[in-house]
Length: 229
Image (cartoon, rainbow, N blue to C red; front, side):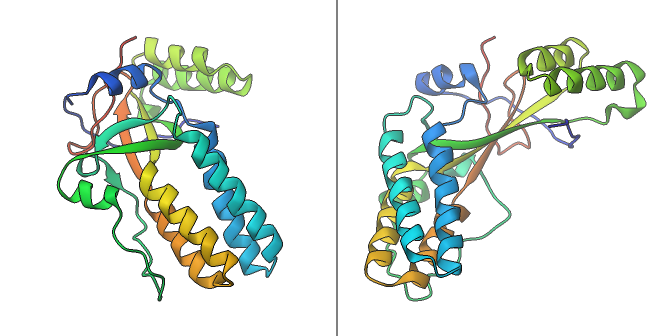
């Protein structure tokens, strides 16, 4: 994966002790959460293709992975208002009965929600092409990354002064578990298309947490993780 440039700003967040502990490894992703998220996509594809047995298998795998993720060390607590929404908006129920969950109700009151990180990426938040030294550092970092040495790649960028951002994608854990269980029940009841709508709501519930490598949040409202190197 090559590094890409983005344009960002920063401010200073205030973190809970749990967030500080989790964010020592600021780009850590829940393996179970990532697996569950992929299985949900495979569930929708299977329903689209009319492979109902496969859909039941994938949604069952997603439920089991999320159940394990309830004890995952990557979980963190944060107010939803401090996280960025993705570009996609939740899909209407289309008849599916999805009452607001505890997570949704709590987030509307600016209370803390438990999040599960399911994906992460690294970008560069400046145009390095006009600086020969930084351009060379990025090329060198890409070589390290091609050899599977992410730590060395990041260190090269850091030493050269290249500004690095980390984007973590997370799902509200309790809300996600409730919706996936609902989708599984719908599939078992033969409500296949209704189930895909609920799964789409889960996928559209992804929020992003963006921070620079030194722990400063990006774009004002986006809070980040304060790094302790």
